[in-house]
Length: 116
Ligand SMILES: [Zn+2]
Image 1 (cartoon, rainbow, N blue to C red):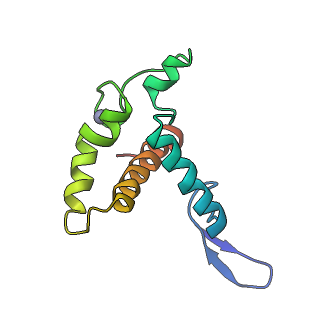
Image 2: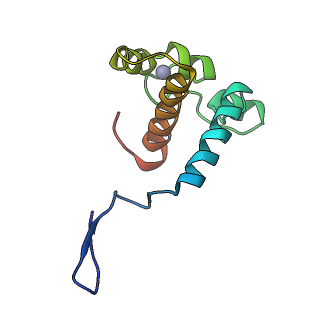
């Protein structure tokens, strides 16, 4: 989206309400995501059901039951992202980055109606 300001300047922004975040907030978000990933505390659909929240258990990408293992280890999108990044070092940081990409992409499909 191209946003115009009163002084005549323009700024390119991402669609919807998504706005860039500061490095401090980004670092905090990474820490929270890492902690939740390691402790299986992300609100995956199977975890929501464990918390007595009624949701459709279908994975947003393939229709199988969404669990952390499925989403971050066994799904087709994980395999595709892993292949796309095969030339990069497989450090824990890259693996967390892949998991975060999957998580954000999944949420964009569900909450922003983006296409896979
Ligand atoms: Zn899936």
